[in-house]
Image 1 (cartoon, rainbow, N blue to C red):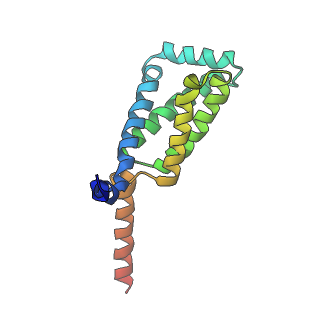
Image 2: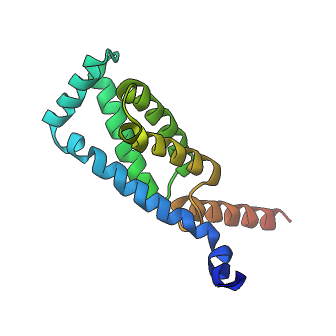
Image 3: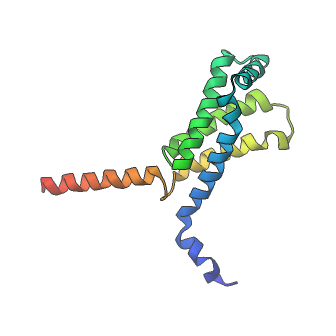
Length: 151
C-alpha cells in the first residue's frame, strides 16, 4: 500500500472529529440516562457522593449528571464543542479525584479517556459537520453582507 492509499483520509481529515463526537456523545448519554430518568438512581448517586464527603451531594449529583447529559447532546449536534471539551476536563478530573482515587488503571481509565477527549475537543473544535461550523458560516456571511452594504 503506497502513499496514495490514505490520500482520501488525509484530504478529509477534518471529518474524523465527527466520529469521535458521535461515539462520546452516545457514551455520555448512555452513562447518565438512568440518573436523568430515575429519581431513585439520582438519589443513589447523591448517597455515593455523600459517602465521599462531597459538599451539597444532591446538587453535585444533579450538576454532574445534567452537565454530562447536555454535553452528550451538544456533541451529537456539534454545538459549543470547545466549551464541552472544557467541561469534560473539569467534570472528569473531579470524578477521578472523588470516585476513582485508589482504583486500578482499568477502573479509572474511562474517566481519564474523557479528560483526553475533552482536550481534543478544546483544541480541535467540532469539525465541518456541526452546528458550530454552520453558525460560523452564517456569521461570516452576515459580516460579508454588512461589509458589502457599507462599501
